[in-house]
Length: 436
Image 1 (cartoon, one colour):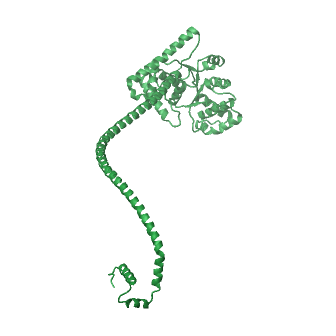
Image 2 (cartoon, one colour):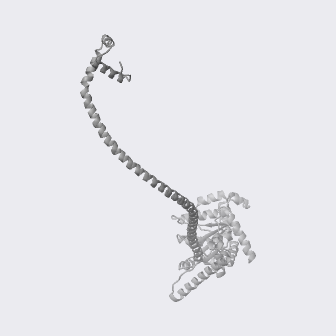
Image 3 (cartoon, helix red, strand yellow):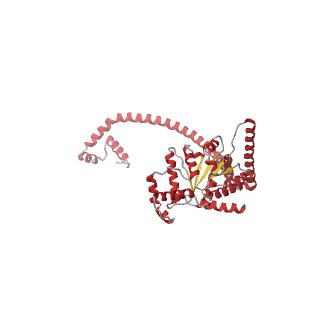
């Protein structure tokens, strides 16, 4: 079994490495290995078809693709669109038919058809015809058959066929389709649909090999859980915690299945617990864990930032305390200087007050002298006004002096009293000796 597991794991890795292939992330536990082996064996049977019965998420499509890859077959599946009708369905079948017989992509093909692809029940009639006779009758028109004959002529000759009649080439084409086209029909046993399909289209039972996909055992659940829990999200928690989570997830799923069975027995109500629920449980747990981790990391970041701010504040306080100590000493020194300066200013203020008093006294004295001076000036002005006529008369007399008058003065040996008085005044004004 271990050799089979290693081989299938390698094949799965090769499949995922193949370009243009949809990658599959599946866990190959024991039951999955058995299903792959069964599907591979049926696909290698001549005109072998398989009916895979199981609930959604049990791995029917993925394991069929892996088995088809190992068997070197193309895996084809429908892409349901809104306007997908019988004509589109048959056109898709014709494309698959032709790929199995000729062309660059010629290979055996496994057609994966599920109950979700039953847009119209007439699809199942064509599927039943394929299971019964290998082909869908009357699907090709004469023009389509003519086109197919022209396109496959090289392949027809390569196969050593010489009869190029239309019937012979048509038989060759449909014979190749029957041999190279295999069906993998995936059905869910849930509800009445599967029972009705089997009753109405018995070829689903009679012409296929049935493989039942039962519920995953606990060992498989643990393996799947370990696969999901091996991501980077859980690396930091250690293997013991991861193993505990895997066992708890498996226990929760099996417990839910048991509760569903109990409800079915007691209440006659059916609740399906599928592998998809288990995978959604693991994905949901990882999503919640990631969200909570982000919240905690954000809180840690805020706390770290807060502690960093507090540490920076503490360092700033220490620096400020040291600086304040230095400033305190400077302030004390400046305070002493200020007190000393204040004392000096007080002393100077006293001197200034005394000087101010002296100035006030002198100001009062000067104001009094100013008043006296102004009064004397007024008196002098009055006297000047009185003397002004005499002054003007004297000026006129001076202006009227002639040379003969000077000669007359010089001729006096003993001038008259009035003349002597005048000349003495003149000499005094000239700051000279007032003598004759």
